[in-house]
Amino acid sequence: MTEGFFSFSVLTHKGWAIPRIVFQIFPIGDLHIESMSQSNAFANYLNLRTERLIVLLGDVIHFANSFWNPSAGQMSRAEMLRNLDKDISIWEDFIARLKVHTIYYMGSHEQFVLRVKRKCLPSRKLNLANKFVYVPKDLQLIQIGSRSEPLFLTGLHIPDNMHPVKSEESLQRKKKIEKWIEKKIRILKIPEPKKTILCTHDPCDSFYRNMGYHGLTQMLERWVFKTHYHAHIHSNIRQTLIGETPSINRSFVALSKLDPQALEPSTSEIQPLYGRDI
Image 1 (spheres, rainbow, N blue to C red):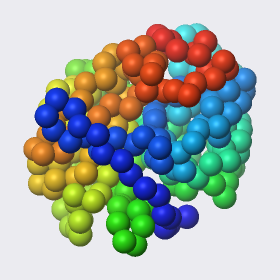
Image 2 (cartoon, rainbow, N blue to C red):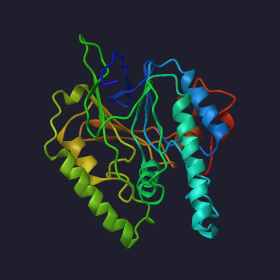
Image 3 (cartoon, one colour):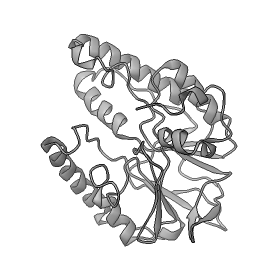
């Protein structure tokens, strides 16, 4: 799916316009699915939504049996790989269950696991094929509006940085990722930025100095996008204005704690997953 026809609504907030997906597009990240039962619950929730397009903003799977298992440090290599295979099966199960058009930008958990899988489970085939789900290339421009009212979507699959925040390893990895972002946007052309939505898992660094990326801040200062949607931040749902672009946190974990109304209509299956400490 490289082209579609979806409408977009704009609301106002404290004096400035926030493009907010109301009836047609639903951006959401940080589902952090931990089991097959949660895979079923979240897929049912998304499949029942009235929007015509879901935009996944990464960290959809938590990989709770393997790398994010509290007992991961005590596992043997063989046990870790068996549990990783189990987590990958949960990932495949969730994607296979989706029956609504979905654009998927991966987060740090997925990017980390993909990197590890290439080294440790090279023969394990990852099957994310689903006619309803599209994983675009970095900064691929996707038309989601009508021909008479054009609207576009673009985004980045930012590499993972799984080192402890502020550690030397994290700072060095962050520098490499900043260079990666800079290289990606160096020759980027956005024909109609005010009609383009930018999607990433990670936020800008304006208010999230350690968790965000300056390259994204520079993008929003250079181009006035319609809006920027991100996830990754579990502790707040701050809506910021960077340059003239609204940057909005659409983390399920944060929304379920601080603005559950934004997740309506909800389901009895996912309500017990509100407010998780992840």
